[in-house]
Image 1 (cartoon, rainbow, N blue to C red):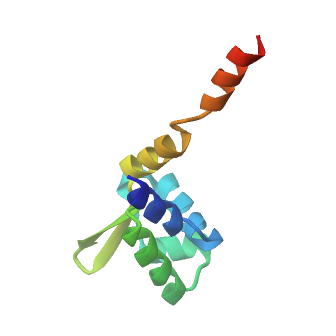
Image 2 (image 1 turned 30 degrees about the horizontal axis):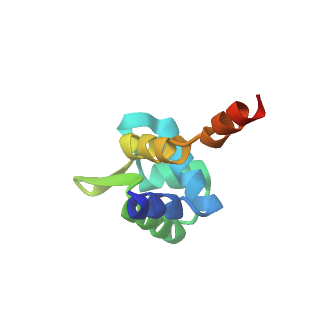
Length: 102
């Protein structure tokens, strides 16, 4: 799980990729074409294609060809898994501290 989590977090490791991902999250399950993402983010098409490939390789975006258009969607299950991974041990050390303080 560590390797997969690292790949997912790495894919989100730039301001532009976070902007693209948040745009796709807002779009929901319908997803967006590259042109729609570009018009919403203002990211140049060639740069956007690079960021989308990086996000897809990290498992946080999926791409589906529909005719001549590529629809991009946030991978909500993977994003939830990443959030659970990072929060799974939330405050675990505080519980031990509280018992020792008493």
